[in-house]
Length: 598
DNA sequence: AATGTTGGCGCG
DNA sequence: AAAGCGCGCCAACATT
Picture 1 (cartoon, rainbow, N blue to C red):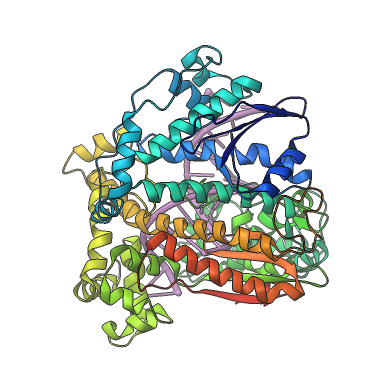
Picture 2 (picture 1 turned 45 degrees about the vertical axis):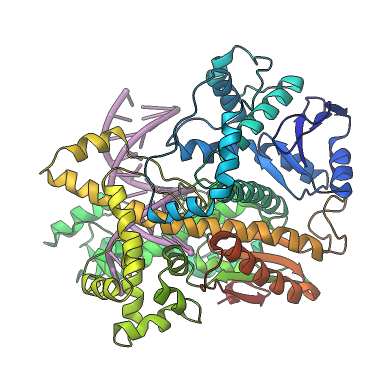
């Protein structure tokens, strides 16, 4: 049952039971102690908490020792629905949604672009579609109290907050409206799953930030010292970098060159009679000059020092935990982004510093060859899908490429990314001949992009429409710049259908894994106030990176956690893709140090 | 001095 | 081996 949660300034809150269609099912009640009230409801049955934003509401509950099982995140669902209508740039916060609802703006028509797969999805959803139409026809939202003048809410200052009864009205009305908009989609069941998974992801993200990734500052410091020399004074170069910088200047005949400055390096090479287009390491590798090996070493170490050096350690690791802020849905494809700490770009060398607590262990799960498997399931190419039912996908496909696994891999990556350089063109031709349905799937997505249309993921996340600037550029034919940007958008939409559908799957995996992990702990089901947190004996999700999950758990629970990850992956495959021979295997490693996984 | 952009590179 | 897609972050550089 959905229950709207409106926290008040004094720590109390209004709760209101909602009907399945989102309308109020009972009078609102005021509770003085929100965590206790939520814990009690969690124990008494299945509840879906309808709140403004898990990112905003959940951390306080976690701090009070509480975990909840399910929620509906108004802001995240609003962003999905705005995107569905090609309105990615509009604000998705509750206040903005409430303002739009009050302005009584007409619902936008669904996006005109539909691929073959989406049409199939729409047919699968035909039954829900009939019901959805009824819901869409009926007025589902009662006008309530105007927060502070209708459309004005759109332009409220950033800190503006609704409170109390107004907040409850807004939550209830926007929630009901969102359910109706989902029901009116061409594939409501899928979009409903996406909304639920996105919301569950927001719970997982907040929990991961709260629990933190185990991180040993002493190990990190040793790694840095071994590579860079002892920690330098603030603002000065570590010993090894200083040595390399001096050697680099010497290699340029003693002329002072700051290796951090691409412009100075380009001039220095030019002075030696070597024109370089850029100072990227890939370009420099092809340059024959004594400064090059020094520069390559410098760049690698300097990167480590500036991005993940001692300053990073001071800023981001406390109490043996790295606590980044994850931004759910932060990437257009539905992948997560992160805010500060570079959580999704942790260099491989630093994985040595990620070490389980004594008596605990890390279970690291990695979805093997996720994106090509997703393409196989999306496209429904039988020959391709059957290859994806077995072990190594590229090995299974190698037969089509003269038994060469590497060629199969290049062909697949080129098909998904739109590359055509080198021998990729020939390999693509082979792919097109042997797996025409799969090739057509990505090529139709590319055509849609080139024509300025939008595409959607399997669960219905939409890519942004092209900008006005792109449209006017693309309209001018004959211009090589126009042709280039048209092709670039084709590569974007080609990749979007795969990357975004893979993100759908990963999100559903996370949503399926959370309750399985919660059930493994000694405390049993969630909703036990005062007992949650690190050291509570329960497995914790501590990291999620696109196609990889990490669970920190007591050693004795490693086996059940491995099983839970595998079961969640299977469940996600079934929920997202239905009946398909494609399997989504997750390779799991039970290790005490992240660096020892794979 | 503060803010915005670019080049480069880490991750998937 | 690199390339095609998606990001965040830093120092240097450009602009206001």
